[in-house]
Image (cartoon, rainbow, N blue to C red; front, top):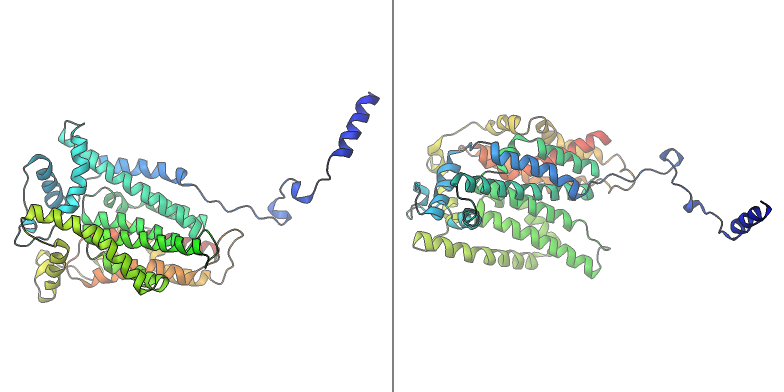
Length: 395
């Protein structure tokens, strides 16, 4: 027994003294705050995938344009027959076959495995839903780092529960494609605000330029292949990119993105229309005639508050938070951030969210209104609501 006690004394004497850092972590009551919770992408993605896949299988087609302007021409590209609307007439050339060709490539691959046309239809919708889920999860994860874990989780919950996202994520519509591009562009835009190295160092500057370049590319894709009016929503991003990169670098990146996208798009459209045509330009010119009572006004007009009433259904409880977001973000500046969270940046958040409000005001002023016109702005609406809810809790 005496031998064992002596050995224990020798080991205790040889051991280094315990420093305060080596002790067990203290509780928050002892002055140490817990680390902010920031869920990983792998945790955010599965529920979104489940909801989007269920939406692909269960949600109806709510817009006649989706059926006749996109599913019918897609059927023609796949099987050689389908109805043609006047928008696809070479006289007008308002719709892009390049947009359909992207989906036709996947649909043709699916049709080589699946025999039923219904199965191919559902496979395309599932692919759209999965793409949206991945992009939504990335935006929520980036919001956790850009704003706070609480704001990111709030955005994730709103994306999961939004009736508008339920329909928009699986719709075969250019406005839905534009929404996917917004998800990707705004995630890259947030990346530009989070350089991995100290600002001013060459690697950090390269990281920022790369993030802005990605954001510009996705906006260009949304405009040229999806919905050309997306340039309205992306105007704040473009201005911020000019300030951050300089006009010369911004123009160079915009021209490069435009060339990479416009050339193959024009080739595909020229092949199917039998002549050179720019559907995005024709669509802009056609809708410009609405000022004279023609154009889109021929298909009905609605009052200015149509979209606010529509958002009561598609955003539900997120709508009040969306409308109050500017005030709550300004009030949140007066409250210090929690330990480990980035400081409040109401000015930066206002720039990030302003495109959504600009989009709502722009389309509310246009007489002809349709629910699908708001699809590209849904992610920004929900992001504003999530940031507002997070700031309201802090305040």
